[in-house]
Image 1 (tube, rainbow, N blue to C red):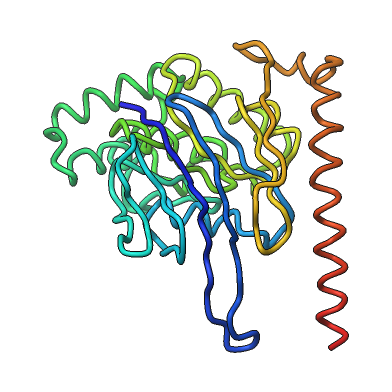
Image 2: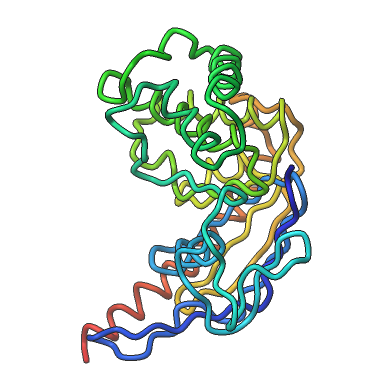
Length: 274
């Protein structure tokens, strides 16, 4: 079910009451292959989430195009429509608090009429069991830990077999230990059933640990500054974090992002002085 995603010379201009015309993205291009785990990093405010929102259909672009399996889904004349082919896992989560874990996971395929409720319950029960969540099926989100909620949200996103899974800093609010557990969980799912993933993070170690490819964006207007292949073996474990190749990649990504963060700071200082 996974698909290739192509971002071609995407530019986004929006109007701000304080700043007037703002160039948020300029000529962004990125190719994401089928079943590739692609991670995007960059300084705050560089346009990472804006780009994801354009792909998801939550925002429009000004120039360029986005294609899914070579079919144009977004261009100046076409606004991508949110749908089950591009599901989003958000930073702050989105489980329905009045539904149990099992009901949350089943909801998407049933409401999209992809399957019947009984079939969805069977698939959801099997998926939750496969990843060690059998015992929480009847729990409501308020009764789960943050790590459990994240894992249920990921299962809910992938049960409908989206062509692309979009993840906007999904682990940012988690403590360090819980983040490690959920990262391992996501990698296990990916190793078992590879799928096309577009993942945004500020955590550079997380980016390298998860990705097949890490792309670094410039400060605003956001452009692709550097695209790096991460040729670390899979399946991955935390033992990789101390390997010479991992440390080399971390230094390379850190340097690229730091350069842009300094530029963003200097630009902010100049704007504040006006």
